[in-house]
Image: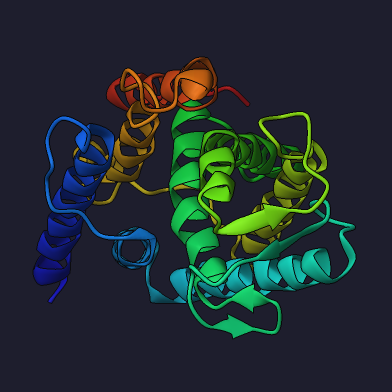
Length: 261
């Protein structure tokens, strides 16, 4: 059964890589591609399956559950009050809602929270996670990796009508408060997960190549914004917020681990 799940995770990784390629090159190469909902569901399935293999069922359930509960709670508060991310509301493009938040959104938080966490683990290989300070550093770096992702994702998604920033903002129409809210949300998720599980970040039980798959997806995602003419204003942001951390994480994964405690 585990071998089947391992093969399925590789299969979902290949499908995701194809989807990202299709999105990035659709102006010149009209490959079949899913919409946002289809892409998100496949991505969620990959993150859940990979995390289940790497962490085991109990830790996956806690990671997934905490991600969904914390992100949904803060999103619902955010939409109702504007206190967390700024004043915004969701359109109808992302499907049915629970309260004011599409059901897909808490799932999408986990689909991104998990790869960003693996990126941070790779960047900080050798960090002593037995100490609270080490866990806090990991949670902060993972939160920054996650927020760097949103820096390139949020403006075009908002421009497409998936959500609306009611007061606009200085960063391509997005308020800066949004990014503080993302750091807060993901930092809380990572801290809660490590407090609940005592996870020491051992995600290499199937070897470095398999462990690197979420990092590769993270890095590939940045390339979508570097295709000429697609999102020119976000290209430089994507290089520094995603591409460089992703490449550095891959280099760290390929290198011998050294203690940085």
